[in-house]
Image 1: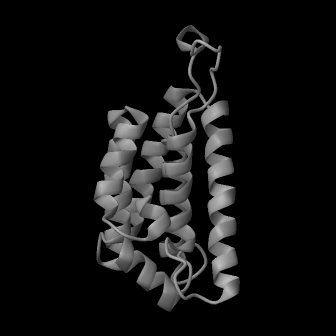
Image 2: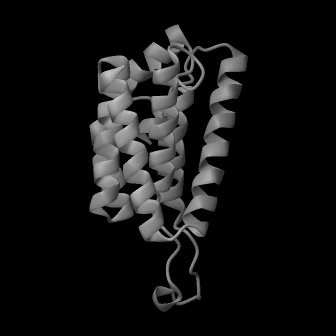
Length: 172
C-alpha cells in the first residue's frame, strides 16, 4: 500500500517485504534497496522518491546512466525477493500451491515505484498511464518470477542485484 500511495518510508517497506516473504534475505534486499534509494534521491521517503521522479522524470529512464541502472537493479532485486510458489507438501486444503497474491502485489508495486514513481497525484495523463502500466507489468513479472525460480536461485540473484543497486547509487 505504501508503494501504491507514495507515502511512508522505503526502509519500512523493506521490513514489510521481509515479513511478507518470511525471509531474512528478502529483508536484507529491502534494506539494500533502501540504501540505493537514499543514494539516488537523498532521502528514504517514498514521497521524496515520488517528488523527485515528478521533477526529474521516471528513475528507470531519467538521469545519469549509473543511477538508471541502479533503479532497475533495485526493482529487479525486489521482484526476485518475492515469495516463491508453495511446495506441494504445503498446499492448502483446496490443493492450492500457487504464489500468494498479497506479496506479489507488494513486490510488484514497490518495484514499479522504484523505476516509474509511486504517486499518481496530479500528473498528466501520460505519466499516470506510464505508472499504472509499470505497476501492472511489475506485478505480472513478480508473479511469473515467483512461480518459475527456485527460492535459492532467487535469493542469491536478489541479493546480488540489491548490492549492485546500492553500490552504484552510493558510489556514482
